Length: 336
Image 1 (cartoon, rainbow, N blue to C red):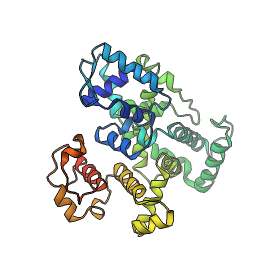
Image 2 (image 1 turned 120 degrees about the horizontal axis):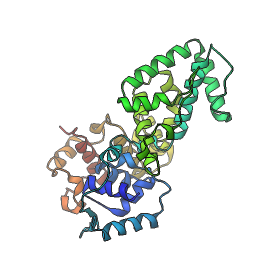
Image 3 (image 1 turned 45 degrees about the vertical axis):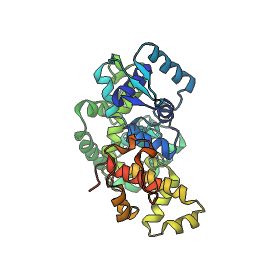
Image 4 (image 1 turned 120 degrees about the vertical axis):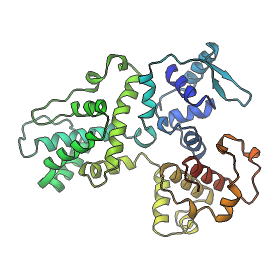
């Protein structure tokens, strides 16, 4: 775990230690999510929900004693040393996405594996041992198969071919070799992982680094049967209250009407909008930032999110919500 924590500091050079801990355990608030976004840490949000704060602080103290981290005047910790870790392991951070997939990773994968098994046997044989015996997985899959029985097997096969072709070869092979089907027995994950990735916490990251890219390419194909099958589960990774605000706004309700209907404050609505912007690259910024706001914010320094709020010396006509929204747009490179 110390190697992973040190890798985060190496990638960003300096970080707020307490906020970084909240990111790792998945403590959801707008300020923590914003900090994660601006520091490229959203992929590890909620990656270690069981990490105890005392263990985390003990690791930081040991890294400081070893001279690998140092505390600076701002209270942040700064990376100092060369990181002695296999570069292939660090690459996990470019492949994982716990923010979007971590919460329901295991459930999503079990459903996909079971659907593939059922589809493979469908119309060929009923004599097989199903991967699942839980009523939740059985009933969900049975209902879906009943809806799409006429073209299930061939469609799932073609979808898998297309999805796997969009993944790197090692990831595609890992996924493909884990499936069970007609006259095919899949391998369990520990059989597929190289020896150096067997042992926590690397095993968890190594598996997620294969599953999350698969979920992503699947989510990018919303018309696929497999995507429709798991879409409700993937939605559960997200803030349901924020999603409700987004749905109502897209139906044409004003923020005032949404607040009245849901009996929530403007500050809560602002938090929902910021989270929507953090999740969605197509967020409609211009509907919430006036031309005057754009003009007043146009002279912000590059990487303005790294500055303290007082240092920016903003006009009193600019709210903190408008600043954050503009900075998200700026970080995404979408400010004209």
